[in-house]
Length: 395
Ligand SMILES: *Cc1c(COP(=O)(O)O)cnc(C)c1O
Image 1 (cartoon, rainbow, N blue to C red):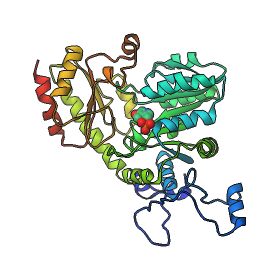
Image 2 (image 1 turned 90 degrees about the horizontal axis):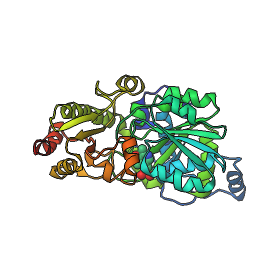
Image 3 (image 1 turned 30 degrees about the vertical axis):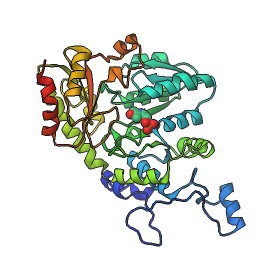
Image 4 (image 1 turned 45 degrees about the vertical axis):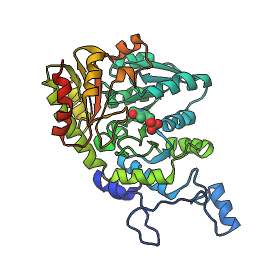
């Protein structure tokens, strides 16, 4: 992170970090829609290409709008370097390609984004990189899965959709005692609520598509970490392979970051009120939300996160039939698997996001047929409740 931002609070960093005003004196960050940059001489071009002189070359790896986004997110996470990518998935791929080679091993939480599973199992495996899966909150299993060739521990916290919490500091200590790096996908909390690097993690992954955008407009991702690992190694892969964020998307994410602190507080407030209300509904068997005292890791969530986030899941009596009936009875909520949007979304994990799992894997992961996930948006909470009520009352 640039030193000039260290004295700023999180909200100020989110609004101002990273923008270097041009001679035009613009107040809002400009979109640099240019694929390449012009040099004043052949000697300057040579110095830029050799790395002797910093500066723009070509937008696959140097674009001022993208760099503003990278600096701002690095400042928010408290990291030395950030590399923006075309999607959350390419952020994960770039990290793995930069840091791993054939024969290496990953220990991953078994509760990770479904496509991350596919990346590890189907594609990294072809490159001779093997992954073992462990229950997110069982430290003993993490330790037992570590091998001499393990290079990364990989997790998301809170998990999707059951909102289990990993003890980031304990896992960072475990990783470092074996000279392994801890990678945390911070998509659900964002730096507004949780800063994994400050808890000892080495690398933070983002799908900017979710809360960083916050209004469901663009696909993007990012990797944040130290100057060598991210600033050189992950950047080197991006420069070569090109899973680059477009300047337009970077600009949308910059605008998203400006309201991130406010939005995450509002998402979490709405989510807590919805979770408490759902706990009182007779059709609801169980509510999963880290902000509830009934959540098994409520205390850990309180020490690690500023608020419990915007994702609530709950189990209804009557299995798939009841869950689908409730989803279909809503008129306002968007039936979609995306999350992190101002618009509340509702989904049935067992047949959508987690539909590829076998029945065995689903029951291991705790994804039962009555489970519903709501990514709580920014509508009035009373209207979200009113939309759900008819489905919760019909039997
Ligand atoms: C959506 C998501 C991703 C993948 O991000 P894309 O931008 O869709 O490629 C990775 N991790 C988590 C936790 C996500 O929710």
